[in-house]
Length: 377
Image (cartoon, rainbow, N blue to C red; front, side):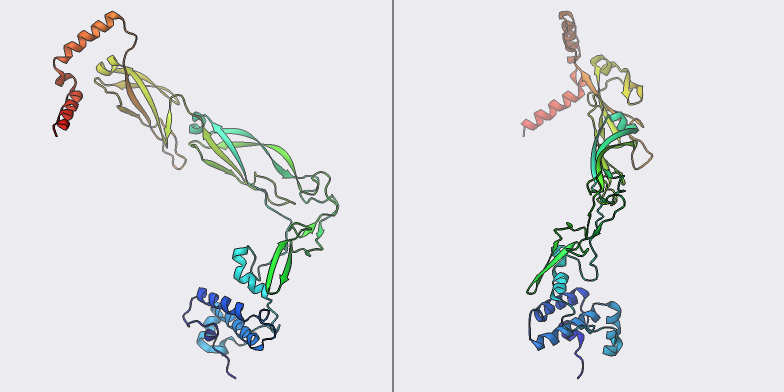
């Protein structure tokens, strides 16, 4: 009797994609599996063909040989394996189909339970002054965490003893229950998924393999860190359970608000108040920077809001060797607490220049013209 074509067995075209083949196999396997059709010889035979077809067509090399030479190209390289219809239990098919959803492992990837667990990652919030964030600094951190127990070297067992295999799950870390064609796996309640139990626990860590301590770390903060940046310290997190590797420590930076400067990326900003006379006549100012004072020449007739850029007085970038700028915004400050004589002089001055507003107040004059045009619409 001629063997059935594998593509026909799965009901797919010869150019079907691996995803289409897998989908067809899952549907047919669920329908014809012997566990779901007890005593049905026809279903059993169909399932054997479906299983064999999927073994061939899901393997790229075997599928290529089958396409070229037919059944002769895969003789001896596939088949149900001589185990009979029960060789692949329905629990295996169930895990293949729903394993990704339930978090299960696929066949051929099951591993026995492991007591070793990676430690948790930690976060440390570090608050810096702006100067320290701009130029960098080495700081010492005191971090409360779990560290490996030195008495048992992290094993959790009393020195001279070793953990033993859990008899409930036989080292698998999981117990399996099957009812009809549904198979469910649960964490072993005896060893809690580790696959081993400690008959004689370490007195120091009580079988955990780690103890609570506060450790001191010296951390170099690079120049240019900003609000919310994270520095990763590999292996400085919590120690793992039963000798497992430690997690990582993430230092998250926060920068205090500065009394003079505000930061925007690699640039710094500040506001510089100047007198009315300096704005009109010009002058020279001492401008503060994070590295000391520098002289800034103010040209005559400077207006409020004008920006002056001091190149290279900003922040060093974390991603390049370049440095940002310091931008100073001029704020013309009106005098307060004037005497009667000062007020009289100011009125006389204003009266004198008001005689020719176009010459002395060009912006005000043009603004008034714009207002008039607007209301004439």
